[in-house]
Picture 1 (cartoon, rainbow, N blue to C red):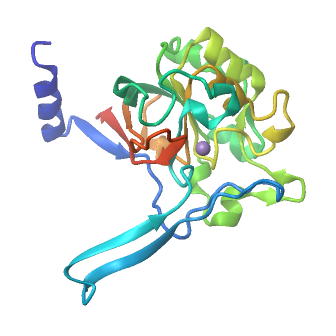
Picture 2 (cartoon, helix red, strand yellow):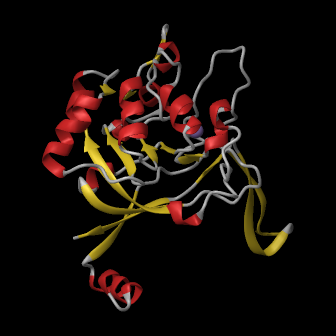
Length: 259
Ligand code: MN
């Protein structure tokens, strides 16, 4: 195409391409992952007023934000995990911008998750999807639709019990398959983190973090509206804040979709 950006601008103006917001609202109620007490916790969101058209600032309104890097809809950079700590260009400020505007595939396992809140994506399930939609191209986001984002409230979303949290994720074999056989850019999920709630007990523990980041790959957590995306053909804009040496960041994730 001679002027692909002009064509895209025209498609957006005519509505033949639409923008889907894959981002959860960010406020004091945003749930944050809970860790066993021996580890340091990430704080929840706090928003403190600096001024609002008042004595402290008569014509302007602004706030101070406090939160962990991995809060709400957020990006996981490779250096987030010890296995990825030496990844070249593996921090939020050094990841190539070309990776931040990338196609996605969406694999719908909402029915499986409704039947089993500990549902794990498997290589077999991925290949079943591929038999219908084609092989997952290298360098794409693998988005796992579970409809988990439709759960209302912190308790239902984190779904913690005496034996830890229960939420869907990936089997170690699925993670290995996506890295070694498909070379995906990374994975995106609707849950609080890319690993299943029970993944601390897997081998390896937290396979998405351990293996994906060890392979220099990325993560997106707490996505929503994946039910509005086609199985293939969505273009994802997911650009973390350019935090120097950042391990991740809250971000706005948008999808461009042909309608
Ligand atoms: Mn994270």
